[in-house]
Image (cartoon, rainbow, N blue to C red; front, top):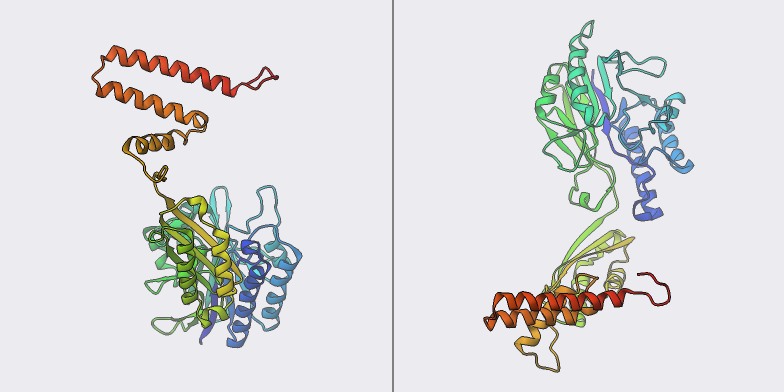
Length: 434
């Protein structure tokens, strides 16, 4: 007997990315596509490995998006089995979540073990609670919600609990976790090592993960589908994302055959434009126009993408002269995108040397550099000219081999003079206050 299921995670309904309503709709469309495909393929059940919702507090429209699609799956005879993710956990002062509402209205089976007297209990699903559910065909699904930093300890406890479970072993066991795996992405919490998961191999045939948005498969045992939609610009480089459709026959070796299905999603374009070669703003704008026109192919424009342009390198002119809005308008005109994001990673020259009167000698250049350094401290900015002259005076005395005592005396005199001048400058007449 062959069983077919769909494994997805990180739907993030309700995410109005970049504050744009159409991105909110994109996340809903991705879930609609998943439900359509599950019904068309006549899967026996759907696994949602956490983060159906983007946040714990949702608006009525987001709830409707979830309910309407879960109802369609229910009407098609497809149960939906999930675990709680980190985004949808209720606040510690709350005992009831929107996932609990979906459970109580028979739209969702929400699995997780409970602790009693510091012992993890694997109770069978009944009365809308439990850690595992047995389905026809000898399929057992065990679910563990997001536990954050406690996840490794929970996995140890789970391994012992599985070893102690009475009765015959099921023909095929799925373990659903909302947890990451070390070595995939560095910035994810609740990550596990392979060594921590390895003891579960004896009891688990298919490890269904969620949480990390990058898809991966390891050893035909650990499966993470990734996110349906693009939750951040960094995810744009992972094109093979969506969900897994799995056919299981316990009498076969290997027991499962897994198909990775890519979900349609909003196109994201990440572009890089180096600024180093342009010495005048108009020269840069002209080059950028040519660059963006070449990138805006008909195929890309037709997608109404989210476009991010990263400006990088060292500017050869005053940073204040760079008009980011003008560059953004060029992108708008070429791409007609849903959203434009300009990322200014340009570095100004360490010192912007502006020739004085068409000719600058070494002494003036030196003084200019000193002023630039001094003006980085807002306290000394009004008197940067005097502070620069003071430093140069000490330098001249040192080059003239003045006695150390004379240099120290001059330095003290200059410092006292500068301190008095700055004190007078900071005094607010008529208030008696600094």
